[in-house]
Amino acid sequence: MKNHQQPKCEVSHNFTKQKVRTPMKISCRKNARKAAAGIVFVLILLTLAFIWSNSLASQDVSGAKSESAMQYVAPYVEIIVGAGNVTEHLVRKLAHISEFGALGCEFALLCVLRRRLRPQSVVNALFAGLAAAMADEALQILSERGPLVGDILLDFSGCTAGMVFVLCVHALVKRFYGKGRKSYRAK
Image (cartoon, rainbow, N blue to C red; front, side, top):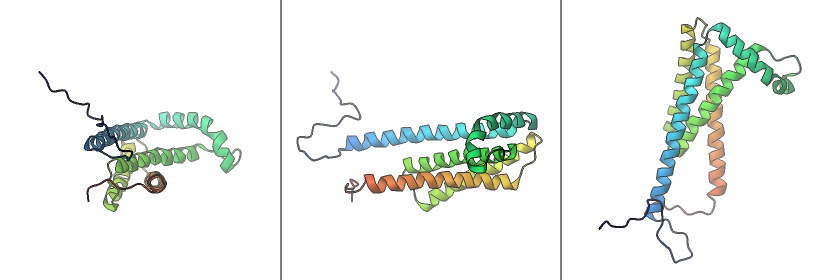
């Protein structure tokens, strides 16, 4: 006869009115964090694949994509830069910043989910963003387009802005949501 075991995330009955974290509940949260971190890691890989596939496109294909994107983006960007001031060059630069901004958000989210918010982890994530930007521009050599140092700086700026955004949101949520909550870590 097999022993009857409770499911991994189920918590045994607690007859007191206080919330008590049992080892099972803590284990369940760790598993959820690991799963979420795995999903974010896959999302990072997909974002890099998207960015780098655009860099491998020929100049003609890339220009056609920029013109197509300009039709969708122009009405919104004209609010900021004025009517008739949206150019293909501006749309390309906004694409650099937004793609790498999303990547920076994903890097910071991975740090948050893995609970690695020490300065070294953040610097490592920033370096990964810079390396991705350099690889992005290096790939343009293969498609006979010229790599630009300015684009590397734009990419890195977008990555940094995305990371700062997520880390600030995390700090605010932690400050207001975590207020008054006790730490359940073993001392």
